[in-house]
Image (cartoon, rainbow, N blue to C red):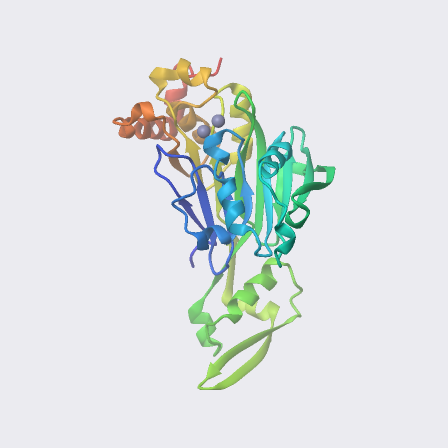
Length: 348
Ligand SMILES: [Zn+2]
Ligand SMILES: [Zn+2]
């Protein structure tokens, strides 16, 4: 059974970092950063329900305007997350345009902006298109454990890090993964079909075993149905396993405090998208710019017990040396212990 999340880096590793996370069988996607989005189709952008902005440097926030333009007048609700200062930044972007005709839209666009601060607290506010995106309902809120999104099937956690400015790193988790044994289904005389999605949703939302599940299918033009208790299906045809976990880390300084926070956030995840903008030989340059080196990224991923690494967000200065960046990150990742004995890249 395929994993729920279908992650895709939208641009090449030297272009703006953007991660698009499509949900299998759902018209929904999550977007991590919104620098250059022109490689994403309109259809795909319109599927986005949440945008996670690591920080407000241009290469991570530039094409919010493009999302806005595409979503106007379509009755959308968009949730956006960012670090301290995000609500004001978004307000300034929205405030840069003239909205005197928006009352003509039949469908409103509502943007909820949410900031995460240090110490698991933050703020939220709403912008309503038909009010000219006037800021409303700004209030403080709490995010225990850094959890920004908590749904039956999906959880998104974040950590506040330092990049000379606050920056957020994220982990997306499929809370549980539900596999279907097709041969067991056959043995019970039940067909595959869309009802399996409802069954999975019932499992993920923790419904009691006695609840009847509607199994339906078509025979010619006739609709057939049967009801089977949820508990029986769980026992006979489903296998529930831990879900997939993905991390997204960009634009962070390589010092110890960041490394400690990252290690806690990323503990044991399956796949990590992490910036490797500079080589270790340029570690002072990386430190001046509050970025990781490839080696430091590999060391942190190793320390966190990450299963797989996907380096990206390379500095253009290495245009001809992409393989070196990848190799350095991979070496530190796979041989972390041995490598860490040498003086650390930018930990001072
Ligand atoms: Zn950047
Ligand atoms: Zn930056």
